[in-house]
Length: 208
Image 1: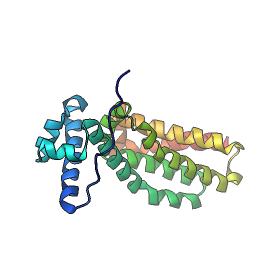
Image 2: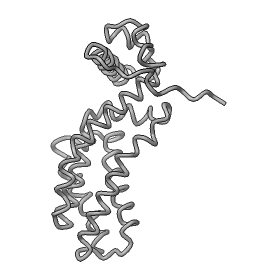
Image 3: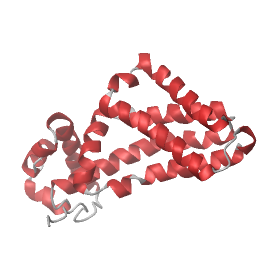
Image 4: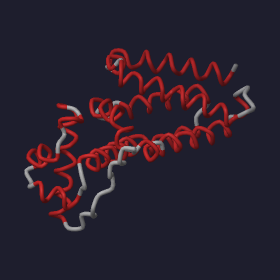
């Protein structure tokens, strides 16, 4: 049985200088992942690009898997910060307008560094961070469940738990697949058509 890679940092950077070192290492890892892929992201290569010694790298991270995990965590935080505040505004909107807003926010989230997002989607199973990264999906699910509860008079589906699962999964699958396999769908020219189609699909299901 293969040994599970270590993905937790060795220690937390407390001082400004050490935080700058960690930030440089995480940024260097992200750049290498996008340009060269996971297999080329050696600790030596990362340290070189970050402008620090390999010894300094190992002070904070046990290996490249932990650095990839840190990149994933940072990317996820950037996505959450991009859409969290706007998601709360959806709760006051009628179904069609609210769903359209949620779809648009999902597209916006997936446009946060899409090249890195595409690489991380392929690397997540290799570094064991999938469960932690699903937190954002669970948060989306809870918000959508609350939204449907407030709009019961507009929809025909009684099982809101199932409806939330179907809608969130559909929206996530469409936008995530666009990033991974059809990035042209997220271009300024085609993005609105994707939002329109997803909105019709979800509202049609909810209103029957």
